[in-house]
Image (tube, rainbow, N blue to C red):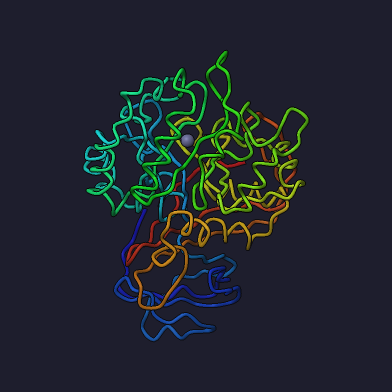
Length: 390
Ligand SMILES: [Zn+2]
C-alpha cells in the first residue's frame, strides 16, 4: 500500500539521525517530495499530519547486500520486498549481474522498482545468477577487465563496487589470482571491492584463508559475512580473531554483517565482538530463500544486533550514515537534510521478549523488536508489507 501526499508532517516521532547527532522528539515537514523544516512541535499549517507518535523516524535505511535479479537465476527477489516493503529506501544488489547482464538488470529490475537500487558488479562474467556453489572465477577467461571497465563507466550512476566470491569453490584452480586482478581493477576504476568470505556450500573444496584475502584489500574495501561460522571466516580454529583481520579493520577495511541463510552465527559474533572488532554495516543478504526466516528483513537483522548488545542508535548508524559511507555516497544518502528529496524510514521499537535465531538455528534472547512501518521516498509513503516475524 502506498499513498502520495504533496504536503505532510511526520508528527510526534523520535527522530534518530546519527550523521548529525540528532536524537529526540522532532517533527519532519515534507512538501512536494522535499524535506522542509525539521524541528520540535511543528504546526501542521495545512499539511496532512502523519502520526508518528511512539515511532522511530530515521534517514532512509540502506540494505547494502541483497540478491535482486528477480525471476532470473537461483534466488533473486523483487527489490521492493526487502526495500520499501520493509521500511528500507535503498537496496544494493551484491553482484547478480556481471558486465553482460547489467543492462538487463537496469531495464528489468531497477526501472520497475519503487526502491532505489544500486549494484556491485560481479567480477565474473557469469555474475551471481547461477546461485552459489559454481566455480564462477575458476577459468581466467571469466574475468574480462576491459568489458568490466566499460560497464562501470557506462553505469557509474548505480555501480558502487566490484563483488568477488573469495571462496575455494568459486576461485578453484585460479587460487588468489582473481583477487589480484580485482585489486588492479578497483584501483584503475576507483571503486571498492566487496568480498564474500565463508565457504558455505562447496563441500570438499579447500577454503581460502581470510589472511590471504585481506592482503589484497585497501581502506574502503568491504568484507561481507564477518560473523560467518563457515571455514574462511574471521576466527581461527581456536576462536581467536586472525590478527590480519584486526589490522585490516584498523587500516580502514570495512566489515559488513551480511546475515543470509548461512552467515550470521551468534557464537561467532560474540567471539568477534568480545575481541573488539565491530561491524561498520548491517545487511540482510536477502533473497527469495530467506525472507520467511531466518532473515525476514533489515529491521529484524538490526534487532538481532541489538540483542547482541548494540544500542538502537548504533544499529541505526550502521544502516544509515555508515552504509552511505560504505557505498561512497555520504553526501547523497544516510542523513536527513532540509532541501533534499525526502528519503525517510519509520519504524516501531517494540519492548517484548522474543527469540532471535541465527543462520545455524542458534538462538539468543531478545528484548526489543524493530518493525518497519513506512518507507518514504519523495511524496510517496509506502506501507511495510505484512510479514510474520518472530
Ligand atoms: Zn550474498
